[in-house]
Length: 165
Length: 85
Image (cartoon, rainbow over all chains, first blue to last red; front, side):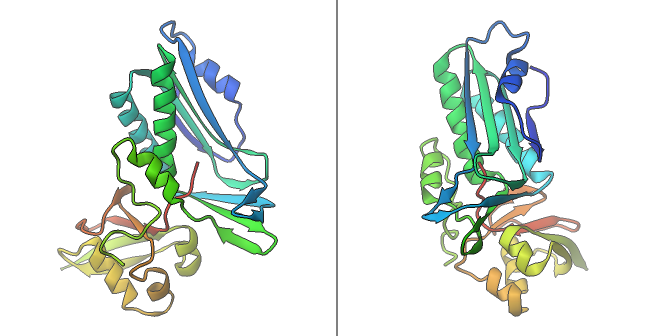
């Protein structure tokens, strides 16, 4: 604990190194839950040869910090680490990771999933894929809005704002 | 007395309008007011900011809805739905 909680970077990361740093010196940790997102070679029925990730420097980091603060209120966790890459990525590359420590697995699993659901719908990142038919911006998914809704949070990310149509 | 805003655009909106611009707007303006002023310019602004299109906004780097009131010196960003993770 005590290190950076949120990093946005072009470089790759090593989950094992990050988990070791996250739980270093904290003998109260009995569980680590982690998620790693990677680049698929197909999306929405088309081949993907590469992906470019854009973010909103400053806001992105602040938004994820706020998510972790909220996760710490909701769950009995001891630490959290989020790394998200930006720039040009290839299929099979790692895109991002979330790791959470807690005394027991239940809270770690839940907090990890909560952070992912939150990040998917609230953190300013945008993916652009290269496909055989040209480049395209990835569409937001209503299934991600549904995922965050189960935590009692209305995202409205994937749809026009109500009353705005 | 007009308010000076710093507008920022990201992803598909940035591709159409550039990374950002300055805008002077009347006091009391909301995010919706700003969007309408930009739409009224026509052209690419009208296309990508059109009502009915999924568009999100952030005021001073915090997600906001369109009823948020802007202030002098505010940074107001428009961008499409987010797709990280």
